[in-house]
Image 1 (cartoon, helix red, strand yellow):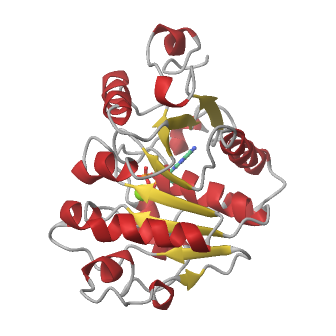
Image 2 (cartoon, protein in one colour; image 1 turned 120 degrees about the vertical axis):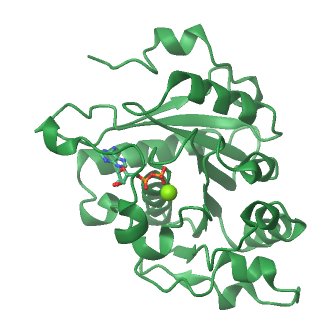
Length: 264
Ligand SMILES: Nc1ncnc2c1ncn2[C@@H]1O[C@H](COP(=O)(O)OP(=O)(O)O)[C@@H](O)[C@H]1O
Ligand SMILES: [Mg+2]
């Protein structure tokens, strides 16, 4: 079986056909339960400071950010939280395919609009899932980094924070996109998605270092595809940042706990 699951490291499947929404298709499955655990763990982070704006990023592409962020956002909506999911990976936009909506307007439309009066609600769409709204990436500009690093983006997130209980952002990989590091600084926290089978330890280490330089705490990491050789194919695990938030430390602890090694 494992043969059929071997995938290229750079995978455009979700950009074309959307992320797999197992939390909708099969909410009772073990994997959906794992996504609910991730949601619960994020809730636990609410203790010191309210966590309302979070982003998912990774070291490199195809780690599973779009899949994980969409499914986690769905579990939040299913728990009754008014949630908005934003596609801010302007290099590999996916959200419109996932929810099968047009991408002719989206985040970039709002950010390039000169008029501050442009109503975000004219671009935000219903996802079809109760309590979940979506903001697709929009037409891809030549200068994605500039656009996402603009004050408009910070203001937009602030506005959305007033409207929604949770703002969930799918961000480009931190090692590929200059704006990711900057953008996370204005959020309540970041979650690092690590595709266990694909991720290079040095790249993940560098990603953690870059995130530590931002003002935003690393809320934890999602180990994706943990059991890629097992029969299920999908597997998700969630880990806390050791020492929590700002004090997240990458190092021997993680190695001892098998974070980057295959479990078998
Ligand atoms: N746990 C998993 N097991 C198997 N395939 C996965 C898993 N997570 C993601 N994928 C697949 O890997 C590819 C990349 O996932 P995606 O969510 O688009 O990553 P990213 O947004 O980080 O680029 C997609 O084809 C997706 O369906
Ligand atoms: Mg993606």
